[in-house]
Image (cartoon, rainbow, N blue to C red; front, side):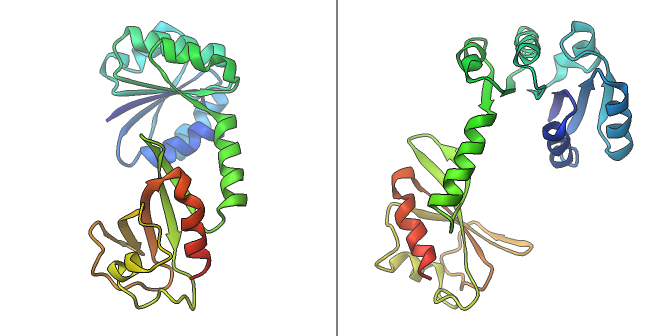
Amino acid sequence: MYVIITGINSLSKRLVSKLESKHDVVVIEQDEGRCERLYSSTGATVINKSPSTISALEDAGITEADVVIASQREDNENMVVCSLSRKYGVPKVVTRVQDDDYLDAFQMIGADPISHNDIIIEEFLSAVEHPHLVKLANLKGDREVLKGSIRKNSGFEGKEVSELKKMSKFPSSFRVAALVREEEEFVDPSDQSLNRDDELVLIGPEEGKRSLNRFFQNQ
């Protein structure tokens, strides 16, 4: 995919590092020093202009973009980028949001807002309330994608995934979507025997997360 990211900061630099090996990435930033540092350390194309201008977006190839990510710290600047991107017909526009008062406004123009505060709060709550699980994503219908790990000296070691699902304490509302082991991934892991440090990817309702956390805690 062709991805345009506006603004260079800690968030956008991490996005570039994750995306550049698989996608064509162009970054727009007004600060020349930041542009030079990112260009020297990545394979991304960097444009040294104000991101919230038509000329910068056109130089970045806005008409060819599959995704625009507005990652600047100022919501007003991200609003301009999102509005222009939608007018140019970009199919997917995602924006960082600092002030939650802007959430409705971004949605009205067809952008997908991601609240920085919501993410941080969710991560802290998850770490406190469900320390044996890692939340990977939200799904429709109040479902979540979670990850649980097989610990050293776990009673789960040696058991097949199908056996695990039949255990009385395993919440039946969850299904095992995949097993991740070092460099291997199993999308149909039922007959796989579990090893130490294996990671199980599970999908189920948010309300059942507490039971699943206890299941992994007591392994």
